[in-house]
Length: 68
Image (cartoon, rainbow, N blue to C red):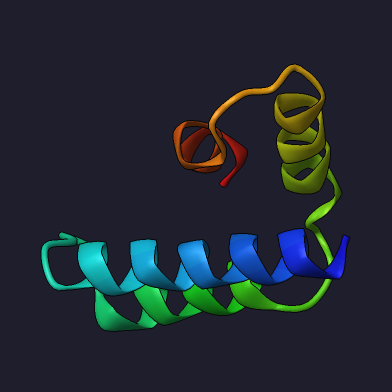
């Protein structure tokens, strides 16, 4: 479970880094969105999505965008 949590957190950081430069939000709003999303916890839904994917022999790389 810790491995999946780390994977989800890494992917979320990548998403934020990619979209931050192209976002039309102010820097303050962007920082607030980043903070609330990347704060600890709140990973159960993403982990469950990846676990269901694994149970049905799915590709984790295909499921990761949906999980995040």
